[in-house]
Length: 159
Image (cartoon, rainbow, N blue to C red):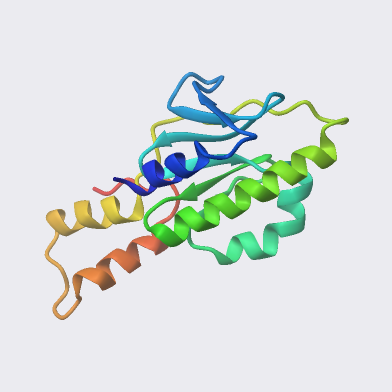
């Protein structure tokens, strides 16, 4: 079971969220009765509608995480899902998003999904693909190669 599937299984138990097809028609979404909160476009990433004010308030902390990608000016962010800690981070941010949407509900009905391309390659998949393309440096252990994948820029395509 992938990290995305573990997150989706937990979200299925949340009473205020309903799963279904996203408005962009790609992947799986979880929504309230008023707006879409999170989309899983791949097994390795989730796009979260956090709202502009919440992203602005949390931006310094969001930038510290290697699992989060923030697009300037967007109300959505991407959480890369590679391990259980990433799932916990996503679930925490979904709680923040639910609160943030409640705070801005009167002013903003909800922005559409801003997913424009193929799914984000997970850091682990990118590192594994790179490992097949080039020999690993001497002494670099598999766990270290996986950790190095966190430093690969968003939407990096090896080769």
